[in-house]
Length: 371
Image (cartoon, rainbow, N blue to C red; front, side):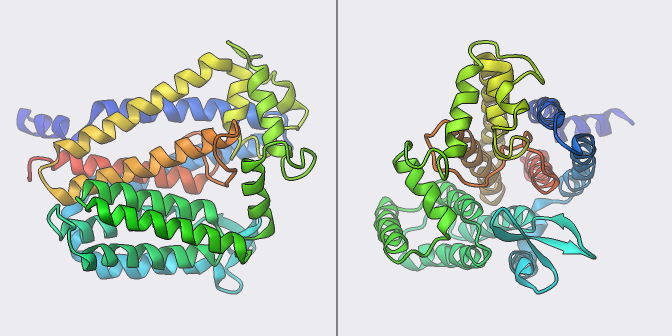
């Protein structure tokens, strides 16, 4: 490799992003190993987690080496494919129920992946292309309506599953990208009013599944039904509180080992971390997340192309919301939803998607000078 090629390669690699991603993957693998150590089939789960990481390197490299600007010309194809992914769990014989939602697909009885995960990345690219076409000024109602039409279509398909948590991720992605895309404040005020009206309608007409309503009620009233709907939150708080400053040690958490923490290797892995590694372990994780998000922000601000900047902002918004929601729900600051913790929770679909998101960021970074 000659000097010019070496320089081009170095320019294409965002070292901080790769460093923080690798650190989070290692941290997550350690926690998944600890959380599944006392579970039936735990060793198999750890193997699947590692396989998910290896498989995730494929979209990372593939997306990285594709010029993201070309994706703008594939808008129709991306919209069609994204819609197919979101509707695929409702196809008879293809979808399979898990956690109260039909959000997975299977082949020959084998549950494969959650289509809404890769659909997040497609949605980010599509919405980035739409917003970028307004050149940083969304000052006409029709422009805002066009963006929200894409969101409404995605939400409609997601809520058919129903998967409220994933739907909220799509909303968060859209709102963050609209802020970066220059939408006027009056439109955000209108959205806030509509959101309140929609929430009232959902509560009044019981449009959510019963377990989803119970989760929201427990968030509003934490002591409600401690042996039923409030059980998960109560056990999570006990686990995190018992960790103290340094934790009880990896694999030594009493709440984890006695199976009190629900979904401890997926949605509530932060509870396991808090119990076993304590406050310092939690601070380390949040510090790594902050570094990761700042790397994404640096990539967004370095791009001379609005489309690329919006893609980076979309990825940042996706990660930020999922981190705040997942960590917040384990301590009672956010309602409980089935949102995984990026790079930490067990689950190949989420891991592959997050690594694909890293590939998108690297694609934007490596072409930040317009080359």
